[in-house]
Length: 306
Image (cartoon, one colour):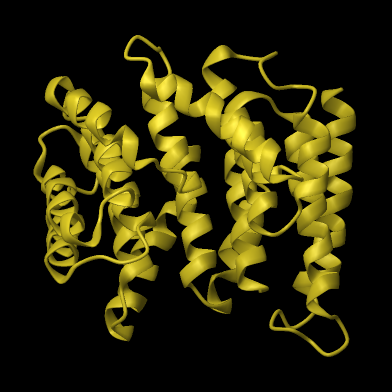
């Protein structure tokens, strides 16, 4: 199985080299964008089929971001709840995004919400993260979230606050966002990592929160596990061109990281906020032995091709 997977991936990479390395990347007249995207889509589909649990989920989510829901639904429908129990929340999140009908989407979201409301659930934190990523929030859950926060440790609080921010009224949003941004000063690097991820994925940030984020990026040590997520979060919101270019340079360093999660985040965000100058680094990352690194590279390249 592993040998056939490697052969398939090599063939896809050869196709990518043909479509991307020998042509001008930016929408060459002889190669429509759809043609350039096809090998990258095939690579993500291969990763989705060849891997399991969270890596499979990462590949599926990348495909969904680029409108490829049919292939995802075919793979995930028979898999849900049959693999690692800890990954079930992620599988339900995928099925919610790949659902063909609103009823199917609601059914998957309901399963995630059930885990969120169960204070004894071992996957409650993953449920909060997944609902926030889906943007599926319920105002009626706010009392439950506030009670959870009273006993939550510093590493748990950011995802709970993320959900609270998304479900806030216009009047409450500023205060909840401020509570979330305050977690940037936690002594726990995982708390800072999760706070950065949440702030980066919010559609807008207040000037005060953005200032706290930029200051945290400046102070974060180079060996911190949170640093790549902090840089990515600032880049996702940065509007000043010179600062954006500097952040791109800093984030590109993580394409050479030894940690696949850092490569996944860096490659994805470089695709979302970078330029064609990031193409060579992302192309090299497609050759990585780590599936999450390859998934991030393919996702980033697909963002650049939009």
